[in-house]
Length: 421
Image (cartoon, rainbow, N blue to C red; front, side):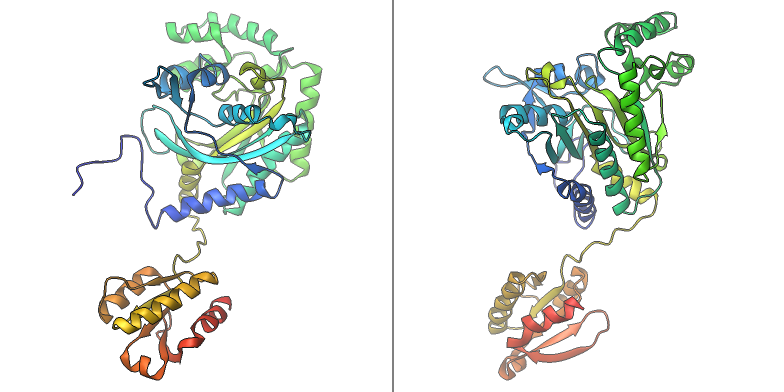
């Protein structure tokens, strides 16, 4: 037995469960690919300052959860705790915004890392699929992304999720609210660290999950009461577009999310079947992030959906995904000449798109048929010496148990026909 184990707070994806994760990633990506979003992949680590500036120096992610380290060359790097800052950095570095076709629409999939207290639904290594639309300030773009996420979840069969929606205002109206909220927070019985956070970014205190803090925030001023006319009109148009698309949502005036770069539209997808870790995804508009990391003004919006959390939500609802069979045909050779003939046929089947496997290791008939059963294959091909002499192979239907002989040269055409029915 191995003496090594996966690090605390991480997990291994192993067959057959790993197929669910692949299916979830594909389902989330499918509507994005059909809506003009191109795939982007960024390094698993970046300069620490990218996240300090973009995500926010006062956030838990930067102050407590980020895996930061110094290289042998003296560079300060961090494993990426989220995707947006990396994607925007890559888009700027690659001058995608200068190609003349804004917004730049990108989607990505990958692993992210945060040093958190491990529990169900919260890991130190987790997987997300995300989407970013960079370089356009348009309520229709915000609505599009929310609608695409809703479409992805529903295509998986997920039903019991809720969409929470809010506006965080902009640089015109948020400072007024910020001052009012700080005045309110200074009058509460909060610990020193929370009071310090309130001075740096008071909106982060609204995101504090501790019951004793939430109890004191019941009468906190709400940002919606401080929105300027432009932000009110923008938010109302987002709401109208989502409603017209038949996507239900709930207004949540206290929704702020955990990152500092959000402006105006912010949203979260929650599933009540997951307990305390109810958020399965979320996002919002981040119009000032490009400038924060040294780029030009590029108003943008995006989201990230948790693959791990989505799988847990599907399990909570009892949704069984219709996964394609890993193996459709399993070949069982009996003897060296049969091995050569069937191996060639398995290769041919794979070339025409039939999922086929082979009884490796010189198994006997009984052991090989057990392996065929375990593979989940619909059909087995059994070839022995007598069959070879007659140039036929035994084709067995693993569901019905029926078996018949077909010509060796008919294998590919016959199985293609059977599997298309």
